[in-house]
Amino acid sequence: MAFPSADGTTLTGWWFGHPGRDPRRPVLLYCHGNADCLSQLAQVSRIFYDFGFDGLIFDYRNYGASGKGPLSEKAVDADALAAYRWLRAKGVPDDRIVIWGHSLGSSVAAELVTQTRPAGLILEGAFPSIYAVSRCRYPWLLVFPFMIWDKFETGKYVTRRSCPLLEIHAEKDTVIPIDLGRKVFEKAAGPKQWIPIPGINHSDFPSVAQHYEKPIREFVKRCLDSR
Image (cartoon, rainbow, N blue to C red; front, side, top):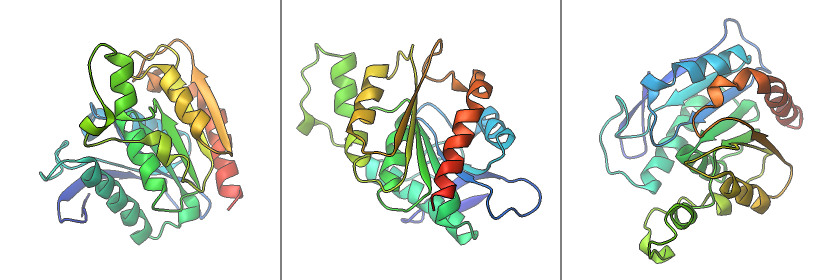
């Protein structure tokens, strides 16, 4: 499937849905990380499907088979908003949508929630900002906030949301250390929930997802029931 972003750039995505219509089935909108694209996310979509969710996974511009276009935080945020609007045009109401963002996509997802009114937000491997990541990973490098054009300020976005937050983070994350995820969680207002995942690295959640199906489904149910 394909749909346009605000500037006309064509984006590609996968829609996976269960047979039959269930007005209370949750719908996940998945914002992937910088190192991913649709062709690498078949296992992720299968996990969501097995959890009982319908869902949309899409590629930002310049990723996978999506069209080429100017690339910036603002442009990627517009792509995510276009995906959300595709769901709404399909007839999915706000109170069924839960947005899930992984890694860089966690910032995209958190920013999207400031523009929309979904039922819930799930962040995986989140970070407060690109500046915070650069200071954590390269403390010897002289970098100032004004030097970073695309800031991806997740820590700011989570203070502006109007829906419940679930944050999960790999305890052995070598890409986004778990302390950065905790800083995002600390900044966020309630309702919120924190789940550290022992024994895995940044992109390994699919390998243990079945062990966390119950708390994730319970969180999503609470989100939908509260609307």
